[in-house]
Amino acid sequence: MQIALILTGISVVREREKKTLEQLLVTPVSKSTFIVGKIMPYIIIALLDFYFILGAGWAMFELPQPSSHVLLFLLALVYVAVIISLGLLISLIAKTQQQAMFIAIFIIVPSILLSGFIFPLEAIPGTVRLISYVIPFTYFVEIIRGLLVKHTQYTDLLPAYLALSGFIVVFVGASILKFRKTL
Image (cartoon, rainbow, N blue to C red; front, top):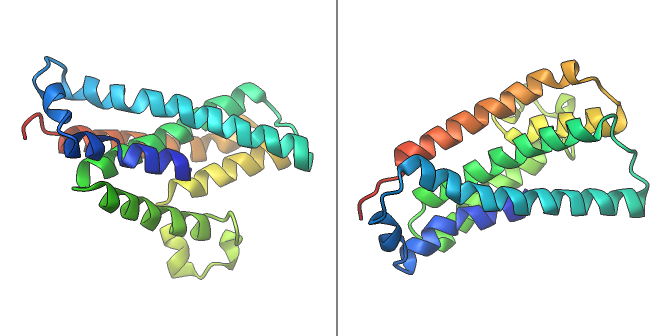
């Protein structure tokens, strides 16, 4: 999550700072194509990172195998797309690379603390728990636990999958609206 969010978060800002964004702006590429083109390489990098970490967990900690490897891949792909699209939105909002990194870290810390990853959601006070449900990582924690520990069926994970899909629509849509092909 950290690597994907930070790498994507600084991508457009870096091009803006180095003045290479101007070259992209004069091309006939549409806003949607530019956004998708920015997201795709980072999705591949993040998925490789995800499977590297998961493989290390299987090798070093005897992490249980998922109930379905295909389902794990598809749901991980959706989560990675959420994080990458959020990073792209950060990149379009931030003015400098440092600002993008700060915003990304500002998102990462609450995501880890309020997602149910460290503390069970039931142990988080009710008003703060509401924040947990606007954090994409909360749904991915539910998915990973469901697939690796509980061997949950896909139908039981469908609400978390739909929530992550909604985050993709919101973040990519906001990125397309925020991106301007003008300097």
